Amino acid sequence: MQIYIGSDQGAFELKEVLKKYLEGKNYEVADEGCYSLDSVDYPDIAKKVALKINSNPQAKGILMCGTGIGISISANKVPGIRAALCTDEYMARMAREHNDAQILCMGGRVVGTDLAKSIADVFLHTDFSNLDRHKRRIEKME
Image (cartoon, rainbow, N blue to C red; front, side, top):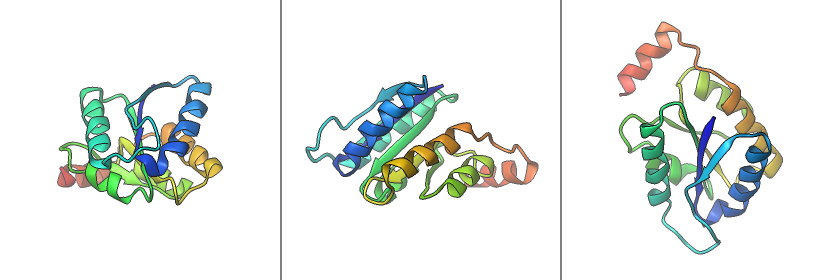
């Protein structure tokens, strides 16, 4: 599975850890920035990853900023994208099962490394339930 990952400086260190973790699990990880602790604008990173997801619907995205809030709002501005801010495994499971979210968002200053790995695992291993009620709701979101 192709994974596009990105963060601002507030989650740079978590992104680097998560990237190595996912590569160790044989995911194809494309790092869309940022590449240091220098300040960047998270909307630029969010848009970059969201557009990659739109052009590769089988891929998933992981975006992170300090809290995960700004980057999730930014990603959701891209038509067709459903980015979910998740702070635990249950939220990640529901984001996939009920909302068919393509992008997982987390806060580098909110979740620790082990929890971030666990949330990512759940997100990447959970399929959309494909129930009519969930499909109907997603259509209404669009």
